[in-house]
Length: 254
Image (cartoon, rainbow, N blue to C red):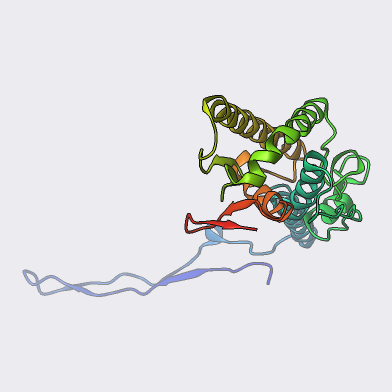
């Protein structure tokens, strides 16, 4: 309806003056209130344009929410760290009676946030799902290579003490002095020196690996998380006869 004409009608009333015995007539008047005319028509074109703008705004908001979900989905790549740990421990300790070379893992094909990110921003700017430099984790930086080489050279000195039981592998993956029995003063000092140096290098190694993982914006890692993964590799690749600390704090010979 184009509009509403509001009409007000005022009916004449008789007012009785109690002090005087007569009535005062008021004539009947009809007033057309055109000044209060309200046009309720809405322009159809304006309404349609408004709806289109609202729909476009909703679509843009939804896209922003999806993008936000992708960028905040950051995770710790436990499987990739485990694979890197197996390779590093094998390099450091070399072949032994209980070790076989760990197979090189196939590149991972993650499905999830990284794949969605590739679809949104394209492969040229998204990080590859299998890590940095085409590997699960880059463990070939100059710093990591230097640490591995130092540890590898120290392994020859550690092996006799590991085999004799003076040094054991702790439940945190670090080396511990188990006993000093059968060692002279010089041997005791040597054991303590080797354990301290090895543990310092292992902690530096975990810190470097965590830093490499952190270069990928979709991943996160702390040195403590990396260390937790390395524990299994150090213990699993230990030689038979070496001592391993269990969760209860007791030592068990492998």
